[in-house]
Amino acid sequence: MAKKITKAAKDAEEIGTSKELYNFLYEACNILRGPVSQDAFKEYITPLLYFKRISDVYDEETKAALELSDGDEEFAALPEQHRFVIPAGCHWDDVRQRTTDIGSAIIGAMRKIELANPMTLYGVLSVFSTANWSNKNVFSDEKLRDLLEHMSKRRLGNGDYAADLMGDAYEMLLKKFADLSKAKAGEFYTPRPVVKLLVRILDPKPGETVYDPACGSGGMLIEAVHHMKNDERCCGAIFGQEKNVTNAAVAKMNLFLHGANDFNIMCGDTLRDPKILANEHLARFDCVIANPPFSLKNWGAEAWKTDRYGRNLWGTPPETIGDYAWLQHMVSSMRSINGRMAVVLPQGVLFRGNEEGRIREELVKSDYVEAVITLGDKLFYGTGLSPCILIIRDQKPLSHRGKVLMVDGSKILTPQRAQNILSDDDVDELYRIYTAYDEEEDKSIVVDIETIAGKDFDLSPNKYVKYHKEEIKPYAEVLAEFKFAYQQMIDAEKKFRDILNREAV
Image 1 (spheres, rainbow, N blue to C red):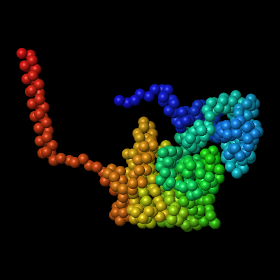
Image 2 (image 1 turned 45 degrees about the vertical axis):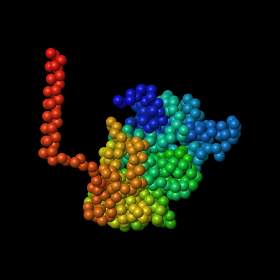
Image 3 (image 1 turned 180 degrees about the vertical axis):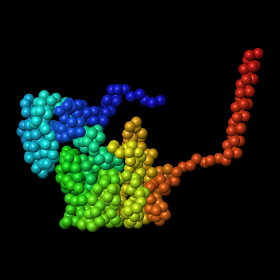
Image 4 (image 1 turned 180 degrees about the horizontal axis):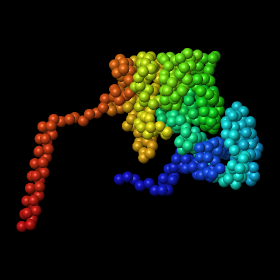
């Protein structure tokens, strides 16, 4: 019998979750209705989230310092006790006290905070300063006050939301208003369990470098930092590039607020103009991780043919499908010997032909591919495609060389009404199958490169995994069993009638 969940229990369960935050943000959007078009809501809600969280994190640090020093306020105000500086009069509560020119106060506070933190926050909040905060024809002081009061109802510190709050918030807004803003289908939120699975497989160690060439709001890099327990050796070891200016700003803010004090996030088109270089060559990293835009069009195929960085290792993908450009860029960014990568791509990369098929053949022959994992459908927002994960290593363990682990994870998920999810147990199961690196009926198999070549270098796990088949009995045997059971039923009915007749007499 299903357990009944009370409304109170359900509400408690949702506190601090992305669903609860989504509802909270939607209420804020409702305050904006009228003066602001729906597709521009995120340009106003997002910076307020950052500003609010900066203040709340600062307050958390102040509280911790006060507890450490038995209430010494001078000690708690020292710069050493904080990750960043909030100048006098620029805290959220300061702006909240304003009764006039609230929009100008918001812009002024965000700009001063940036200037006071040139090594960490500069250029992050100013991305949003073009919004019409100070235009009273758009926003009256009363409207802005209502918005600030609503945002003040909830604390947004690190202690309140353990996950990638800012990235989640921004991606939820993108998802909500994707149709209105005509966002590209490839721009969507990576489910956090998928991110955790990838990072868990790569297992970055403190002191190793981590790079995401399509870092979006920084979720994968943040998870890598968390995986390394925020070790001080993460400083200077986190790298990312993002084409979208706003997303790059989000990534910087997220990383900083999650404890990464020294990182390098660059803004630019990774495929056309990679920014993270070493001596004019591509920089190389221990761990490369990404969920790049699926099947990106107009990605720069013509220049790729003579790529100055030598990323066209095995050829030039079609201009209409950039998946193998991302993959080759990531392979080129792996460090020798210890370098490894995990990438989420559409399952088409496993079987599509023509130039992609030729590139895939060379990829398999290189013996870089350690594992292929297909995921179930309806796990990703904004796309109906079922994704796959490719695990690639510059040098695989001796026992894995010349082989590829094929994992069919299409049934390993937790169904939901609108959007399926990977539960913690699902992630554990997929990770267990990966680490076992063995054959399991219906789930996985280890195949050699010769076997893959025999199937035209198709990497689809369902072409190799052995599935359980029910034994089919001969018709005559099934008929005999049916007749025997039927006769038993007739005999039982006769005995039952005899008993009834005797009792009636």
